[in-house]
Image (tube, rainbow, N blue to C red; front, top):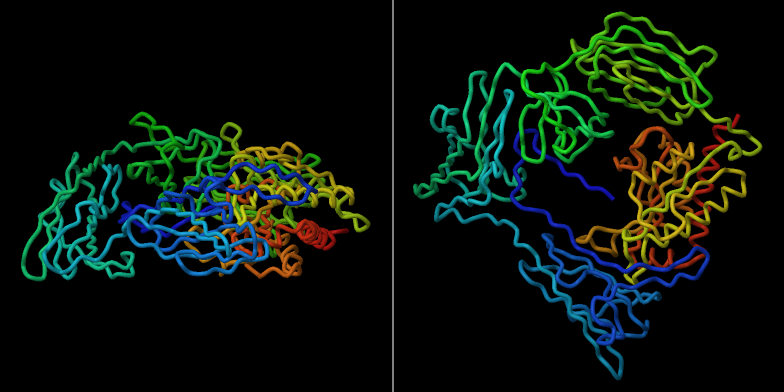
Length: 612
């Protein structure tokens, strides 16, 4: 699944260390739905050298930054005595052995030994832990050169703040200078450890760019006066350029989906189509900082945009009329804009409502044509939030939203709202198309249990059991994969769209991170992104808990699949393969049928609540 981190609200985000992921290798498995589970095992060593115990995680020569690492192994016989780094471990009825080990900086030797009255065999796995930054002593006075930020060349095109930082000896007095910008030295502040990853001696300085500023490729010069009066001076390897002109630097989106983030790699603010102009504020290496409007800035990856020739103005728009149309599946509103501009779509409930905010837009003339012979749109209101932000609120008469999508046709913006399917009391599934996506597959194994059980196989089996249940009730069911195939997330969603599915259920099982204790994290959960998926999550979750699994919650997350808007999508995480007891639950074919039944019951409950 996906990750995010909290970043500073500044132009330069300082990273004092690099997070490296664990490499994990697992072989393909030949599991088929309906057959007994015979999990494929990852062989860390030649099985001829250790026939008693197979280590499934970690892999030999993994590199990590964490202080701990979980492990998993399978004993050939549950009567074996298994020792990990000399400590005897519990062997579960499945043969699973799982736990967590502390790592020292540098190379670590992990010993896995299986013992019988007549034999003893050992597997050694080596793991390298990258040493983390540590607080320096107050003396002698030092500046850590590799900690200096900016670490990459940066260029500013609009007024903004330049944030500089370094790690050095704590308790000192620090300053910085940027030639052609600062008037001499500017003071820096030593951050509290809670703001610097627990370190002391991290200093930060800020320079606010003025309208007349200009510099070309200047280094940042740092000074640090230590507690005993000794001084150190260092220069950044990276250079700073400030180019302020009366001609804005314009970028234009190039792909079908271009994400603008609140902060680099954090929550998504908007998803823009091709051909939307944005004004560049700063070049930050992989990222552009952009002005979405006069009051909103964001960050977009460089591969999402192309640079336009200098001298072009940032196009604003006027909106003069709104018309509507209907077909068998959608009500479509057409907004008459004079230019393509950034926009943001959002959803609300109680009452059910869609909102669209156009940036760099003003309402020239309010003229709205409501759809004829359709009562889906109950109320339509608008508000000019600021000189260049215009929001429309569309209140719907339905008790459940079934999907929406927005796109440009020329300069006209189209907002399509999916009409509710007819849900009959006698059989709520009869008129529905339901897509089931068994997560992972092919080279993407997903989570791996201590015995070597692969998530991709479990997902496929319970998806096929769920498909049988839904088909028996009269639903038209689409499986995005029926075998061990590698698929992209986009391909999975596109298959559901091509089938005109009303609902996409994303079927997964879970696993802890590589540095979390596997015996402390277990249970079941369900996820959604848009509010139209939340009622389905609430309906399925009690049935998942009824299976006897620990509660892990009903969770909002912004995954690629669940953030698609044109159909109802939600994610079910059955159990944790990395916990031996949850893995044993998933090794039982009968339990996989019960898991499929729980997802089915949740769907039926929600549809019955909507039935006419």
